[in-house]
Length: 542
Image 1 (cartoon, rainbow, N blue to C red):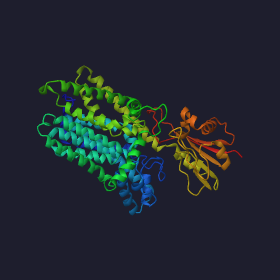
Image 2: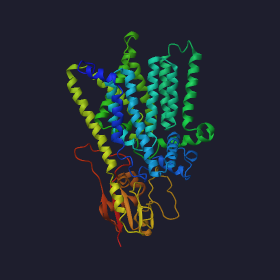
Image 3: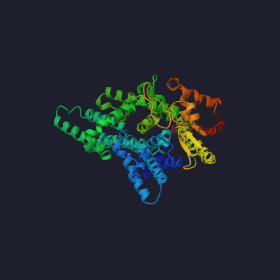
Image 4: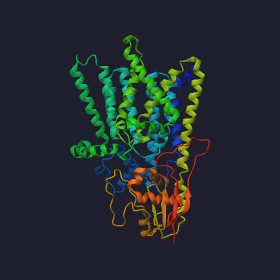
């Protein structure tokens, strides 16, 4: 990377350094903003917190007072943005799109932070550009950058905290350390998992000052106290009820936090320390996952080797690698003990792995006899991973529910329709009766079913026939869950019914339309959460 071959390019980009990170930021937006209006004005992502915000804007939902599943910073930001959008005369659909656009911008800014972290560590423009490029190629980032949720918020503030920590290690100025603790608190105010990152600056501070801990204990205690106070301040900036209603808030927040770690746990579920790796790879693709895994092992080796060397022979880069490793392990701690680990949970770690991946790749270039091979492999890896982003974009733009929504518009008026968890858009006022099909997936075998005055849950075709529903809309995300033996054991009537629908053996309903979208053969195949389910529309047999 430092050979004469690259020197003319380095000279140019050192002079106009802003060009490279800005170009990558704009490229990220160019591949993320298409499809940003996906589903609008309906919200096809059931967990998007902007749905709570839109209801709160109209006085229908007190998101800050009654909900403890999420801290409040992203919701307050979206609420303020929504106020502005509505004041300008726009509708809820524009509030949704604007909130998603802000998430995309935050994800793009995280790429700039990856560039900045690498620049501080390596001092090399091309290495920093490689780190930013690797992060750009993480498909989970473009995927979740289209959602108005809290994942891009925590990714941004976690990366910012690590950047401050790198600055502290470079300069030994406590101001940077305090800034790191403050942003950890802000990250936790975006998503509870962020609080575990506090272990990284705490560990780095204690390790860097281990020689003076016993000599200046009061100075150490002062720093720890201020750091803790700033972390709590950062959290309360985004979640003020944690300060003003402290006892009330934390008594309700802790059970909600524990529930998240056990969400959808099944008898064959394993904790993240054993089962997280496949989910991590789903967000990156196998080639990038292999690079990140190799880079992590290499960084551990470099840090251990440096610690075992004489002080005057230690690799100056090792202290920064230690920061990245501590930060990754701290962010991964909640996932390691959890049974719930989907790809978006790793979003705050991907920037750090991208930095490690770039530093590792540069280290590999030192083997001159393999430079061409390594360079070719790196180019192919980037092209393949970037192609995954194109696949993500096409899945949003061609979601099967778009065509299914148009078909549903043509169904007869004043009929009845029911739908499963991830339906197309249903026109308001078109049907005499339309509602969710009463289906409930138990989180535990002994969990009680919801109750309703109008219908019973999980009774299968019998209930549907009794209600004389004209049309049933089924999405593949819901129906595919009946391939799980545990689910079929807990709800056999529904399992039998959906299998009969799939095979055309239902006594009362026949398939009249189906909608699917498949990626072109020349692009990587992938399936991403909440996007592009297959849709089947069934009609009641007279």
